[in-house]
Image 1 (cartoon, each protein chain N blue to C red):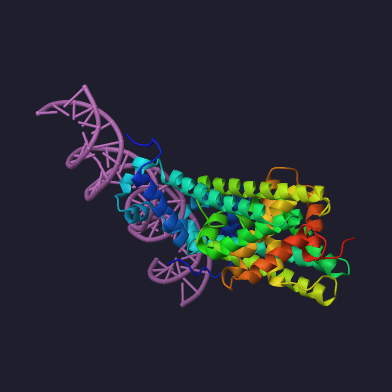
Image 2 (image 1 turned 120 degrees about the vertical axis):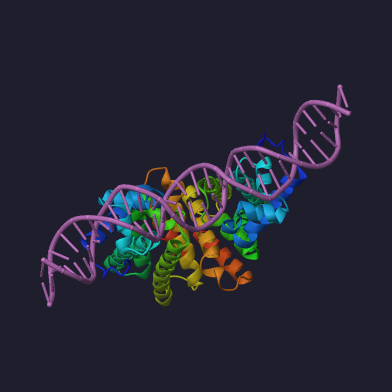
Length: 196
Length: 196
DNA sequence: ACCCTATGTGAATCGCGATTCACATGGACA
DNA sequence: TGTCCATGTGAATCGCGATTCACATAGGGT
């Protein structure tokens, strides 16, 4: 009588898109079931023909968006110069650029208050991102480019530090390449890369 | 007929304490009006004899707790060794120690989803904390102990980084002096202090 | 033609915590 | 003694979004 929803369906897809757009614009708070349905051009009840609950819909949106972000950062790493430090800088710089280009989305992804289930998803995303950085850190250490350190800690601190710096004080001021430059400099220092 | 509440009153004080204890134990989520009143030993309606709303009560609790944290960190700075870098390390290390000693409270202070008004308070607190760090950073730069840098950025990143590292991955693992040591090392590197 | 399922809908209903209400009680004070 | 005000209370009420309901409608397979 409900749920299941094989997977694909035009309406289902449009619901996801609508939710995503609403979240990108005004955060989770503005993405009520009614608003999502309205923007999709269907009745609120229709949402429940495709998703067991609003949270499930959110989770799917969240995953999709995160997937895109992670992919972009991996691409940045692979396209970066040879050194491991280069790769790390590229990853964080890409993270920053994308966040600055779409502030509301970054806010929703990183910090906006949200239901527990979605929040769990956020933690998972952060964890995953931190893990990617851990990998790069280990590579850099093995390559002798940076000193030995607690990579789990450093990775978490980098994610948190860049996140805070992006949604915090800069949420008001300008957000150009100078911010990206600050991030690069911070990252280089934080990981203990030799100056210059 | 309500509000005002001159300021002091035994019951008022006990309500604040009860709310604080509940928050420290189970976060904001577990601190409903009924729960707070129950723990205080009064009826729910009584809360409204002393506070215009639950949010106002929360804000007051939040401020009190933050005040204590900030005071502790200032004390740590003043008690630290001579160098500006020493002071910075001491501040962050104290921040970490206190957070590790009382994880739930740290979580509530730093990251737990909460109503907009209280959230605004949180932002203010973070801002204030970052400002304190900015001051120390400037002092360190003037003293020539660390290189010139975007202190606003670095300060925000340090707050975010340490916060994330404390409520994130470490929320599960052990939380001893080794974590504090990691923080010190990270801070030293992140601000660009000369090795050793 | 007939039924069955997938999809869609407007109008309730539900849950649940915050908030208000109408009514005590007890001490201060004239 | 009588009035007032601060404080306290159990029992509604309120708000508000998520969720369910009873009822279409359409296309497809037999």
